[in-house]
Length: 314
Image (cartoon, rainbow, N blue to C red):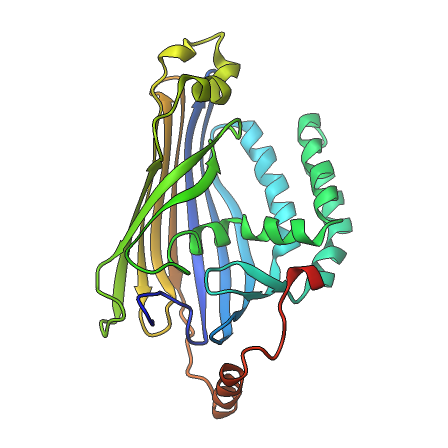
């Protein structure tokens, strides 16, 4: 770690488990679910300008569900996740994708995955729009990049920790509400348990986020207007919050554990969404680089401009 930044700074390989717990009520729709995803994440090299990584999806399972629609969506998600089951990427130190090194492999998978998705949602015509949407994504390489950055691993791993100088406070993050009917600006504050850089083996990062400013009645109308027949939208006082805690190994910069909680409560009985993401690292196979790898690492570090990693060039 340098200059109060947390970075992926050394090669390592680790397996991660992410458990996603959802509790949502939207008028007459009640959804509770628990899903598990597993990945193997490898940092191959880290230079001053970029990080080369590989991400392999090992498992994607719906553990619990009280709603048949969720089971259909999970089946479609499992088929779709195969598109990004093998990723070889160049990232900046904030986790943004600079180049997808195995783009051809991803595009080749789409034809087979599309057939699986169509079979999974055969009795859910409304879900077929998702397939049409993804047809458009895989015709545009920039959209593929954005889709990868929005997947569960990237949105959890790189959302708050990397690419920021600690402590920090940001007011420029814009995210949609859980219904994707309205966007809002968030204020995000993060602090580390140790002053960086530190010689301590572990650092805890705590993050809190809340809407930046007061939610107006017009925003509530836009966000929840489709429920005006079953509740008085004018009386809604939405409670929105995000909280996260990360444990970071200071030698490598990797995340060893994290818990992220998202809350959006428009009505505590009839309209809310609560999500908890729990990420843990297991079967850590970190190994020191070989002399050859160390020599290559130093060579890359001395000549960081050897290549230009631009998404436009794919």
